Length: 149
Image 1 (spheres, helix red, strand yellow):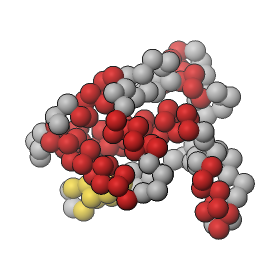
Image 2 (image 1 turned 30 degrees about the horizontal axis):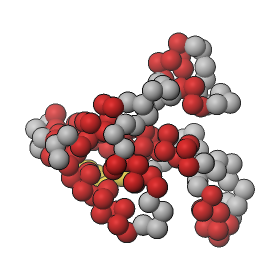
Image 3 (image 1 turned 180 degrees about the vertical axis):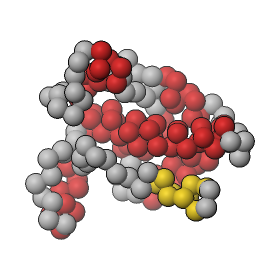
Image 4 (image 1 turned 45 degrees about the horizontal axis):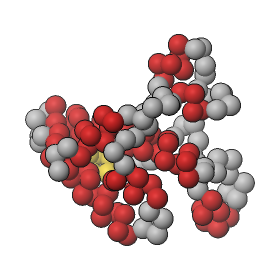
């Protein structure tokens, strides 16, 4: 969800109705907030497959596309700002795996809900959610973000 100030987005609030996932290094923190039994502990591979899509493609791309369509700035400039901010965040965090992937990978995986529905799968109840993901990575995502740089 976007945080708004007047008509402009000023931040993002992460909320996922289907649940959240954590990396193994979050175990100590989860224990301090009485969530030590978190159901979704992601592997590195799962993190890199799902996180960029859900948090960046679903949220950031929609906002930058809307701002660009409204004529507030070019989409290329907005995406360059996103890249700059992500690089600044990477410099400040301990665990850089996901941000390294997002900033350096020439390809990202994308979600394929169409294939999920086509095969009559409920993405909330399937055992392996990767069946909703194309096995080939999408060059479009990272190319679209960083071509302005």
